[in-house]
Image 1 (tube, rainbow, N blue to C red):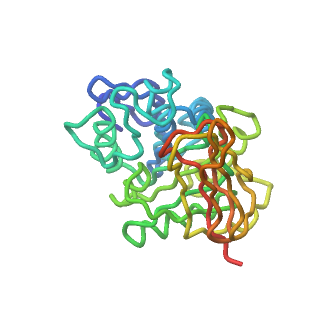
Image 2: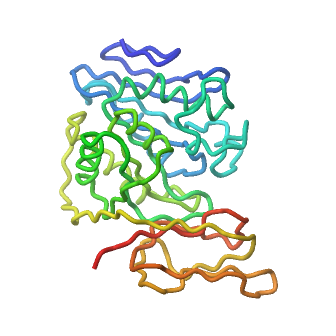
Length: 314
């Protein structure tokens, strides 16, 4: 029997319901395959307005059943479930915190901290692999890429990157962060990844199809499902250095490039102006690289993300 808090699922069964963390509910599907295999968790909706990742998780939960998987597959449909209906990007409305910034959490903390603690205490110790689904937020565009952890035991990091390299996405970024759901899992000894696809508040079919294809490649590599793809992927580039720019002031944001564009050192990445069109800040690339994601809304609050770009070696 698989058990996660109030949820139980026997071999050969499929369960859909809510994981209760105190008074907070997270929609989850557990599929316990008839054949032995690894225990994998696919998490979506830690950032509640990243809709492509959320819809992908829902679609996969409906597609798989105990007859077509090996092991145990746990799919968290929308972790920030209350925030999903508020349509406020990034934060859990009960405590106004970014859930992905509070891991490993606190048992007696705020709602976000309790959710993170439940992951750390009850979910991660049961897993062979954790993969967290993300994408551009309501006001963000993102190129499809993978984050893989950079902190943890060597074999955990190496295996995470090996799995990532077998997913058909062009870029893999080696994270230097110690928080975040997937980073926290890796530090606890669980191989992990984060995928970014989609954005702008849309759920376009081409992005959903690509997301599901990537996840099926991932699950097939871990022998959870049988899946072959006819498309040969390009060689994945690893990025070990990335810059994450935030706005020093509120203003009107004018990016010069799009997600996925190549930039050269000293290129202007974007400008912030005031409401009269007066230039307040200009941002230039510090190295040759590629735009990973960026804010695309005209309005930009102080301290909000502007653009992230990774260094590409010549």
